[in-house]
Image 1 (cartoon, rainbow, N blue to C red):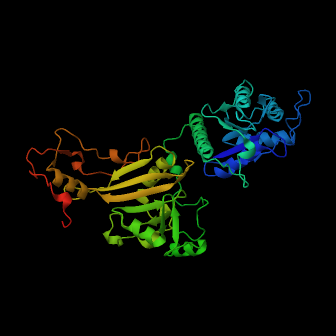
Image 2: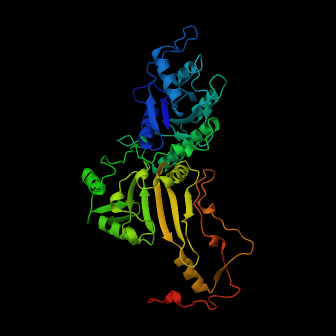
Image 3: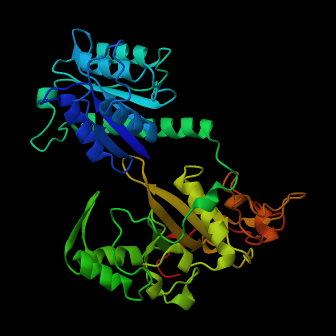
Length: 424
């Protein structure tokens, strides 16, 4: 998404411009945010229309091209600053770029109350006939005591303030998406836009040939990636790279990571390909998703990724074709990964055979699987992605089986001591 920001001040040292600069830097993952200058905007004069002048046209074109607008207002004498009011006069005279445009209002001030009165006044103006902006109606961000709120690098110092601002930015991004969806309803085949060729690099994309068999080695060399006994600081832990590999490779399921550019960049390589539930070759790491799936599966892959990327679902579950009750039940799980700003950062897939878990439960509890009379197998529901049509092929009819007390018990006595065994 593309946002533009306008600070309602022409002062050389503006805390509202400083706030916008911080927002543009901190929330690059939410949107590309460009800060617009209003220094050259002339004083509004109805008798001398300068709407076609360069300064006003610059603002008009930038706003029209943006998905949303962030206005940072100072507070002067319990209302918004003249510079901000002047800009809105020009943007509601003969041109109306703010009409139906999503707008977020924020503000910074020297005092304890933030810019509450200025924001209220600005909201009333923005929602008035002739302006017609769509101001986000949820949380307000009021930065008080602006003189001491930033550190020497221009970052907000108080983490509670940062967390609240993050929440506000996430809500604004949702507000923009909702309004856009209402104005331009998503087509049934919108998932076709998902690009499995990984041709839209992100800030974490490594510039080496994606389909190179030694992609991992090339990418590691290019990024000076750490390995061996070098420590990595994690969210709540400190591990060496060797420990991290041991940890991931000891997981009870196969793990795969696809980034937001639809590039396959990791799997926990603890089994040879022929022993895996979802076989993969080491040389496939680094490939675009289009290169690791057969043509017959690519539409389905697009549907799943599109649904997770666009919040149609956060978790998609599906059983593989050919599963058989009492033998195996292999499940694929796809989980959307998002950063603290709510931005999509890829998909975590895990694959496991859940039958050994079910069998162990039945053994320990003395229960059995029985067919529910009249029940129909849910042959695709577990893989459903709302209305995207992303469903699995077919699953075994045994999926309708229920864990109940067996009428003819297979295991008449619970395995009451199995949990204490350190041998079996």
